[in-house]
Length: 187
Image (tube, rainbow, N blue to C red; front, side, top):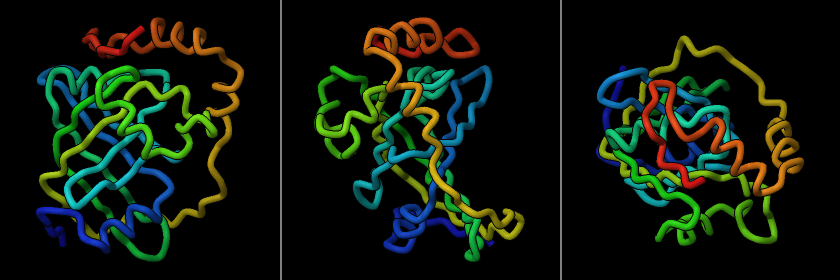
């Protein structure tokens, strides 16, 4: 049975930190709804009602375009191990791009973004999520799956690109949503 909470509990936080992936959901007032799987070391719980998510370069940029129109966001985690559980965080998000006021103070929360670990130099946004409701549900129909390892494909791709190559990719692939809405990415 689903249960709602006004904030993340210590148990919720532990569950989230044990998961290797999560899903983000967003939508503008019209057009397509977007749901994306996310992984790597890209999420930080900052408090009972605050989550930071560093969004890395990808083939689309739907979330950024949606949030320019409507700040609603849902994050979801599923357990694929013995403990059946689905956890969703509902709320709103503010977008920060590299160079924006507030970017550096958020980016420092991600060790891989620090100068000595340039692994996330392809980060195009950080979403600062304000959680207004947490919901748990049973997850009884979610299959068991074993985690093998994170993929290195993204990092290998990034390592083969210059900073200008990444910006050109953003210009080519990340400036508008599937529905033609601007994403606000600085190119």
